[in-house]
Length: 588
Image (cartoon, rainbow, N blue to C red; front, side, top):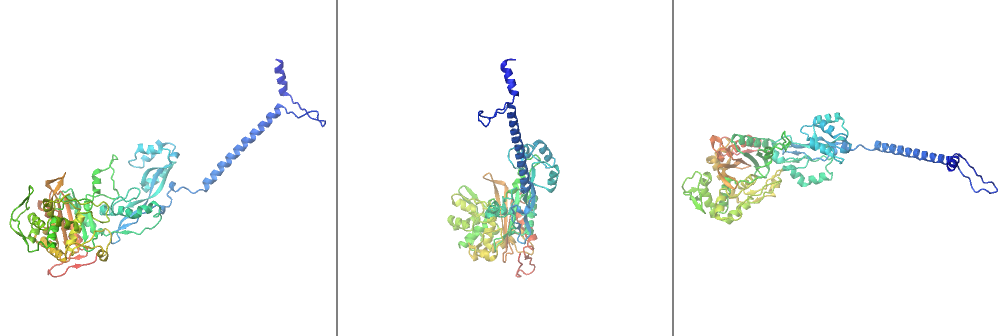
């Protein structure tokens, strides 16, 4: 061993202590290497113990914090009343049309999911039509919240709870429920999965500020006052039933009807078929796709669509001539031969080929006689009169999505002639019923409403559009046609019903189809003092009463069925015996 190695070995084992005596000859005390290492070990042990103590204190503090913290509401059912609500919707008699029910929805915290594949497999056994790929994608994200399925049934919730899957929770929600189902679907409308109104009066409520109040939490835990509509659900059920049966019996593409109070403008019933169930507004097929045929039922043909209303427009043309004092009920027009104009020939469907009085023009639905009256008034007067009745502008009412009428960009004489008998201008059936009401209620145009309205309230909205004498003459024409003309198909024994049919060639791809009709009937009762207006439509019927396809064989019988079943509910008692005996009309 080398000398240097021996010295290092001896030095490492040595403990040399040099003390400084009081004399101060030695400068300091020197510790050995072994004592130095022992001090470092004790220092390290102290640091380690301190670190462990701090760690345990930190963990203990967090556990206490978690123990004292309130449980997150998204992880449990919480308090359902704290969820934003919508007001109930009821009919004019207080019958429930729409309400909120408490539901729960399933969500996940992907950060707490251990095995996404296992979770998807377990949930798929409980939830029908679960999208495996989409659910797996959600569970693999880094977000802290993902919806998995909205609005579970109680059974589904219980089954999922029994699985005990970490990272899965339930959140309280509200689901809109419509007890009447399809009956008033197009009036009440529906909501989406977040309870926001998408159509009908549900959407109207949101447009009036409900959506904003919900957004800031003003409707949470608050009992909202029910919203009352003008419709009566019993009459509504009748109207919807008649329309549905007519569509099937006459093999038509669609059908519909509306009942109006001519004194207040209240819509008492309105139905359009095909329709849909607002409890299931979007139906999903077994393959996961959406049923497009079912979605066609969303289309409301009474207020959200425009049609050429055919000969029902002759009511407005003759009223125009009477109001302008160009004709009287004793006037005679020449309908002995067709009118040729601009390459077109205007002729009657079943012409009498002779001069006709004004009542005969209405009764026989003469195109030639009606065109002659329009020519007496002139193009500008014709356009102004229809505008005055609200037939050429968008109707103002609470119902969202109301269609805008169409008319020629420039009115020429041929346009005025064809419009006089219902071709060339397209309006909504609701507008037509409202304008026709003004012809028989004393000349008062009242905006239609889906909310209750008293006669006093209606009086503040009245716009006089025709003279009282004109209205009286039109009641005479309506009643005569109901007794002797095409309106006989709508007559109900014991009630005095008047009206006008309208059979128009259907417009398909911008052209008139020779084998397809759009039929309508506008009628009122009782005609000695009209109270209610009923309008029916039927689109492209293939058959009708006695095999006919005209309005007299299809649309008029619909009005007959509605009045026969609904008149007692509307408070109108039938009258038999003396024609001079007044009708009894009770409050509805």
